[in-house]
Length: 92
Image (cartoon, rainbow, N blue to C red; front, top):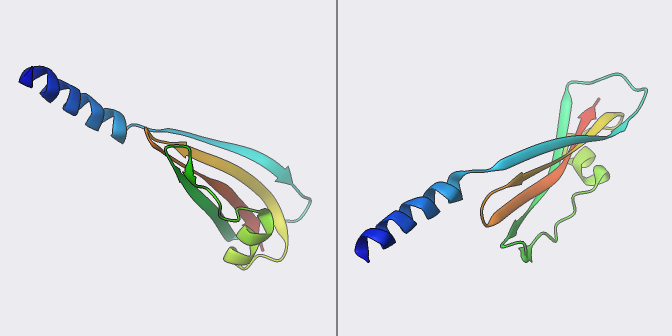
């Protein structure tokens, strides 16, 4: 039984460190690509708790000091019990 619990604990730790990451472009404009990037993200735990932060394009642009947006990406990172997701805004 102790051996089983030890193997289970090691497997749970490894699964907790693995992740899946994806990025999807959601908007493009004709403005030139700038050297600024603004991020707005939020975190959910157990897919229930959290996730109430503003992750809008306007919030990300304000965070990066961007006035002319060139393109916007949506991203998410999924871990075993935690999910982080948000928007990245690029521009001038």
